[in-house]
Length: 133
Image (cartoon, rainbow, N blue to C red; front, side, top):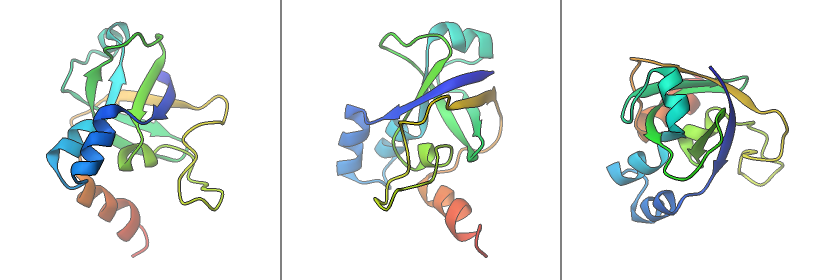
């Protein structure tokens, strides 16, 4: 299914980032996608399932979380972090941060998957080290 991708910080992602990015707390806060309940039903997923999010910039496997605040149908939210970095526009405009917002029409494909979820170290190795070897 096609969705509009929204990204940003969450209080949980910020708290976990301060605790340490290699901890499970950070993975549970940033390696997720928030989807509203109606869209979860259409995708045939429940909280805790894995989905693959694909864009023109890459793809990533993340865990599903039910959006607790009202989110429009057709929109998903991935907290800023390594998992979101895999699918957002990589241009940093010399800031060191990819373009998380500000480009119109940013749609991604989302599908249920049994593929492996990669923790941060494995994700970084796959995306940045193995990619240049």
